[in-house]
Length: 458
Image (cartoon, rainbow, N blue to C red; front, side):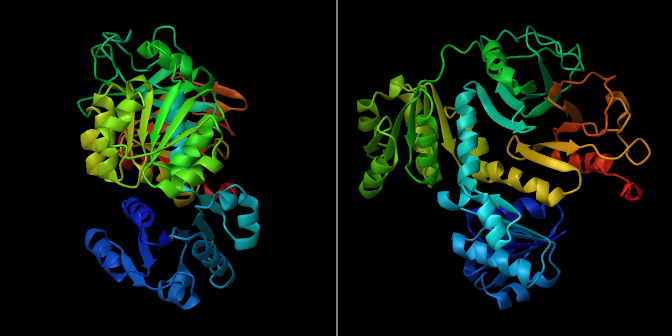
């Protein structure tokens, strides 16, 4: 697929890096020539310097025969104007726009009708939703949802008092005690462990679990013996993500404190947020400040500034001072993989939280939704089953009959209002939504071909 990306900033660069690995032909446009040269040295793509909202620049970047436009420049007006031009002048089939403004992102229909945008991505909103799910599921390392929120895939690290220690999970992954959930994979020291009666779950293992979302919180509590619910939350960083998260949490029964180093921004936040959110001016790496604000009483501490180093240092400090759980927003993958599981409980990658919103448009076909897991090494995709037993390779087939790659497994089938955790004999029907997990995301290409419908069906 030929993809044109507008904007070589943090979001644009991470999108380009992920999509290049999907074997796409990538061109990226930005006004900063030095930034483009840096990306061209690191990634196999073509760079074009110029204003992405100008038709001649888009033409020079190959807009005449582009399949997909991803507009993620720094400002909303540039992205929206570029999408309008892409539709009216170049007839680019698919147009995705990054939108930062809450006024725009909360009115997607206006954007689609007025600017020709097919899909809206909001990295800030994606990360906020992701962080909120980690608070809602306090013992999970990662949470992603499918089927409009009906199915959750959780990654859970087994603690020293977990009831699952020494449990032997069979190949179907269904034999968890007192839980209607399915273990999809076990990772131990970064490597996959076979699901059979020979391997028992150990402390420190990471389990990928599929569960009906309604039962998810109870399932996690049973798995980990969660000592108490999350009530007190401290957020370091009052930017777009910190503001959105504080506002979202204020709608629930959380006691929220928000730290921001810029006094003017603090004053703005104090007027925008509900009075139940305590806005504090100060540096989250200041030990005395955290002590004075009783950091040891915080159930969750989240560092969400724009600086990786500040997020790491404030999270390490908060953990040492007694915060129950710490979460850090870390853009650099190497930093995140290094820090997660140390004193930092969870390292969140903004790019991985965002790329899931693009998978449906990049993969197309039967893909309804997709998410990257475990720092992009694994992938889960929801497929819609079309066709019949003549035009489809999966309709009428049991799970056992599917020719899936070694690392892939059917996590669940969403049928009408039912969430099915399938057995080997479960048969796939037309109209089903099938969620597949692959421990190695590169194997998902073979899975996609299984769900493709013969052209004769159309």
